[in-house]
Length: 561
Ligand code: F6P
Image (cartoon, rainbow, N blue to C red; front, side, top):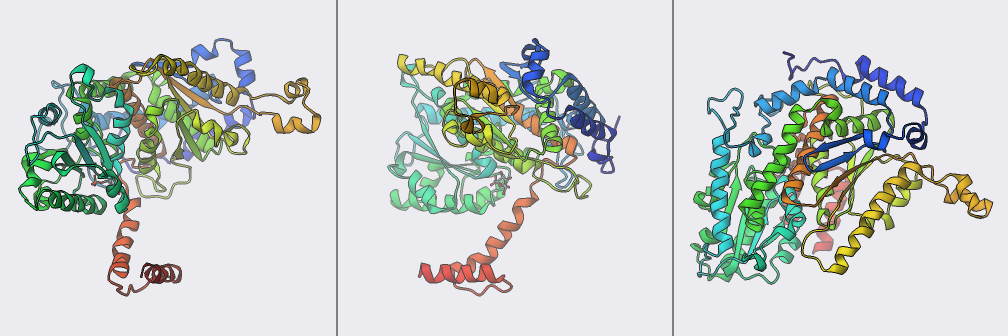
């Protein structure tokens, strides 16, 4: 068996498979998607993969059968499958933090057996399901109104306080699944959830607007329970609660719950550990939305739909584990990104959901992808000489079409993009709004088409456009997209989508030989902020500040009075 965590492996750009891709790229030159489609009428059907409910069409990518063969060879030479299996087995593949990477265990069936390498704690799956049960009990009590606040009122609003992975996942999923939150028609009491993350007091200030402390429940979500933003916001939230409930500290127990791996810090903060929902150090922050970090989401959508979401994750986990590379959606999507980054000079990757409900999906993916693969040393600590993670960005269609799509179509930068859409709108809309769905989706299909095939100068001229205007109205095309189409955005489909991207990111990290599971790059700024803060709050002198920062600090002080 290959040593999947070896740090002396051949650097990816020194592999013969990498060189072969470089040569192939040179041979392909500017081969156009127009010609590739013309030469192979079956292309649109052949270059698709079905994973669960997700139909993935990658035919509008700048690839041929040979490209795909070479990318497969690269994945094999990089032993992506070996590292994948090591992850699922619970090996400590997060070497810099000496941790296993087992978010897949969060959605494993109750009878699965997953052990963390080097720990005698045994199978982690029963623990996962025990916490899920506790979460379900809590969520049901809050949803049904059995859980009462300090004054005996049922809870009407949950405020989730967390940041990064302890915010983006549940916040994104809450918005995505709004149609599945409690509805009176279904005899359910709706509980609104608000999300506070920023240490800018404006965030909490605005999110508390109109809330009654007697009916508000705070869920403080933090893996470490030491994150300064979260603890600061939670402290201010507690002060707000107490000032609204006559300063009675007994109220905290009825209005605060915590999600964390750190029981000690939770207790220190003053939250009863009875109201704490745990997860484990083998769940990375950005991979944690299906752990207890999803508690606020579970309160909103209910345990049953949360379980459906987990089933969706599991469908893609099974696919990723078992499908051959050529039919494996995360493998293909990951390899395509590597192809564009290393051999086409692409710097960024756009994710464009044609669904308002997925408005926050690109934000979520930014952390997932950029915190995972925004690295410039390999797993052995050597500087990389190949491009790693792209800038990930995007907003829902059709808004972007009236903003930055100009650059996608006619700019000088290649931006590979994913288009994500659904055949049906969510249930419950009026007939007029349902009718708008075809228009939305016509736009998604049209964009994929326009980006791929463009519009030739001859076609533009044939429309009677004055010759001097022809270059302005010509579209080069050959801009790659992958389309992900599903029937409907359900909890299960959302789980499938998230797992698809989790594993795509994994594949890329494996080929680039970076540790996708640490995030040391966020530490320096945190440490410096700690040093600078006393200069702002107490006017303290900060030794060793550079002239720019020193001048900014002193200007801030004088402006701030
Ligand atoms: O600063 C980055 C980070 O550590 C993320 O990786 C994490 O998701 C976030 O902060 C929040 O951390 P915690 O859940 O421990 O508060």
